[in-house]
Length: 192
Image 1 (spheres, rainbow, N blue to C red):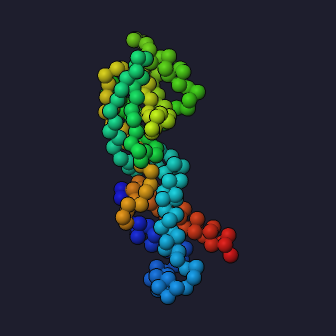
Image 2 (tube, helix red, strand yellow):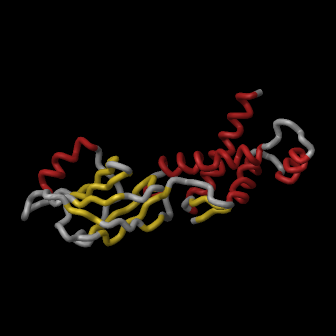
Image 3 (cartoon, one colour):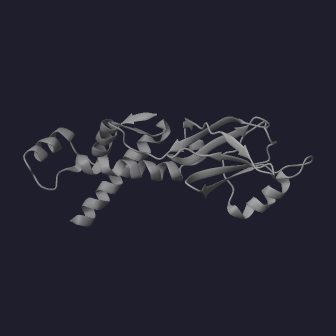
């Protein structure tokens, strides 16, 4: 969900026991060291990134739909190029799967997945592996038949402020405000 940066900043300032109107007045009169509003705003994307990366899959209420064309290699492995702003895969179900996956596998499991992807019949191990490929990130999908397409998929984009909004799952908004406030508190403590 696109969250207002102003509202998120206000929430972090309230957690810091600061009043936005008083802060704006002090900045207008050049009181040094009181631009907490700008500091919170600068820290929000990193707080959102950390919370989004650390959250359990079940704690994330929403993502963006992943629409990526697939290519198949000779071993029957599907490959999808991911959008430039991709940060974390939330869910993927192929058209020939009854249910989807929420976790990617480490590189150590790829040889087993690749070996079973060649099978024409019998058990295929399903798995998805995220890797860097050429000019971006790539998702390798194992255990699907050639010609299958992505039926459902969602992901989290890298949190970036655009205008006065930032995409953060609604279930993580309060966590992001708390993390931003904690970061401000740590900076202020360290600088005093």
